[in-house]
Length: 410
Image 1 (cartoon, rainbow, N blue to C red):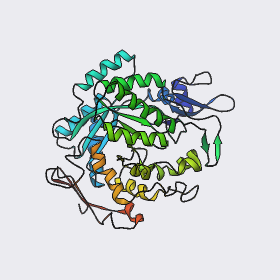
Image 2 (cartoon, helix red, strand yellow):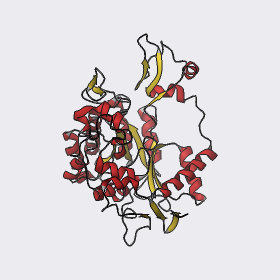
Image 3 (cartoon, helix red, strand yellow):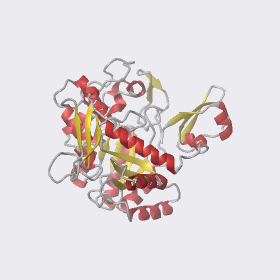
Image 4 (cartoon, rainbow, N blue to C red):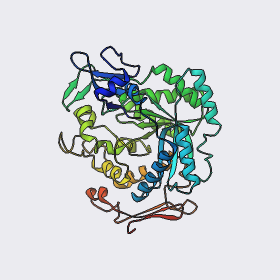
């Protein structure tokens, strides 16, 4: 699910969107001064058009999975998390696995159910019967891991839920716009509780400070009502957590095995100019606060949010250290370096800590006896090269489950 899109006049007409079309709950239709739709649709408003787009067929899904698995291997990668999938996507993964072509470990989160809370509770119970990541499925290649929920939007669309107004062009202000929750927060909290009470791991998309505060408080309330250690509930993206949220996450990790950030370091690079312009000079400095996590003894699992940014992990490792945007529209260092970490820490967030959030840290993530032989061979040592070379490293060989699945020399 993206957070905003652009539709041309034909698509707007096909969808029946005009000046009289109200904003749907949890979304906005951008309009010009005359009240006419501009074509920019944000959050749930995109669904007015995307519902008209034909879905991929099973063959297309299977071919896409095979292609992406090969591309991951060529980037020295052997695993990933696919959050918010449907049964059709699961079936496609299972087919590729059965054919012997799934050369990455995939941890999925199911899409949440829309509907009355009674139906959500029943859905959660059905999922809980086979969605047990700590027990896994089969040979740890395809894992039904939990459920994904959303509390807010994105930094690019300025729809993430903040306490203060969004910025425009770094120093300007998007007056009156503080983003918004994707649905009524009390209703969403009930849904979160339903999944938690069923014993399911939940990944909550939360980008803005207000959304992150809401998320950690929801986790705390759920654990107080139904104490369950080790579900590893996560805060997906967790872009600008408040000090309150940082302290709460550290406590949740220590006491409950929950509250784990799953950030996208490449946000400060690939979409870093847009992000800096929207978050502004003060918030940008604390975006992706990896040093603050480290100082509190926390761990986090890094990813790319592909298709939003390129998936190769070397880019995320570099971005965790350098914190520099792609174009430098607002200077080379709008994010500063106070929240930078060293390459070794960044690598941990893409390896053993990422494995932790796939419930596989005892099986992958480090090279040691008793674990699966998932190995990456680079053309240089990421722990000793200059920072700039981190993103230029070349994958020479990838080993998955003891088999060579990629060689740089062909």
